Length: 506
Image (cartoon, rainbow, N blue to C red; front, side, top):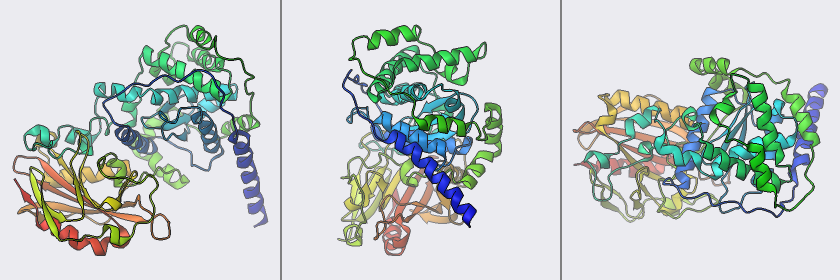
């Protein structure tokens, strides 16, 4: 016991030294960040796209657990950089470390960012590492992936199923039909698809914004050019993946010199003790080549290894998939425990005509039609909705027959469940079962995830996500997702059943 405690004490001291060294910083005055411009995708849609891709990274790559020294250090350094970004254009950045030998880093839409072990060990100093991270964060700031989204090839199964929503296949109504997040272009793109080959213009913009981030965080902006030159020297005839994805915009150092020429002079931060400690520690971490990682992804090795190591990525279950589905509902920024009285069905049942579907719902639950393609129809009590997702309510979606490509109801349901398990972390509770809705036999599947609404004591609570899929005469598919905290499933199930019994398809 004594030896174990000593090990814990040394580890805690080591992590504390990393955090203390990078926790306090001052934001200096200087250049103004540019306007990132506008894109067709909302912030919620970009966030959902990035979260789903990040979940796939945890399935396809070896990721270090949150409590590793490398992850703790990268997160502290990342937050130092985030603090420089204007609050009206920042994102909820998250930082993770991949156990890969090659130099690389990538940031996904909405903020998830991954840094390879090889990047940490190859950086000469903390400023260079900060430069790589600042450059990648700048792609998120400028929304480059969202701007290229319409050009990207949709590779995931659900995107193939649902890129054409019911409204586009002639089954919709004047409100736009049952368009849903499963049909949202871009949201279903895999992590590899999102790691687009940026244009030279994108790279120039990321250099400019990254330089500002470095400067305002107290680092010498030249470090950004230094690191890229190091990459060029190491690349030879076969440049690292980072260089192939990030084409040299040309005259990088000259452009940075010109950019910072008129900025106020300041004394730049040197290396922190934390950087050298974590760099030395990272050299002893088991890392893998790109070829090994590709082979392990095919066999499912990394998903199992990450789970054993405690490296998990847990968005709020089905709600990560459905981000942005309730834009019209008032959403508290910081969810707290919700009283049953505020969400329980009352006032009898009223009818809602949704075009291809008519059904009854509790009178105190509001119907929110999608404002654009890529959002669910939501039926929920106001108190059951937060910015993190739906805690109480029902969501509806549609998949066209064209996208189902002749799949049977069993095949389509199984594939949807598989994607929900892999990409959103939902757990399957038992097998699917036949269910008759509106005179048509469909499938019923119960899943479990984490509720975005805390329990009575403020603690995290489990959620039940009841998936119902129903085929239509024209070959399309309509699905329902009933959402409720696990502790309240008994109180809400009668209302859910009543809603299903009232369904009529047109």
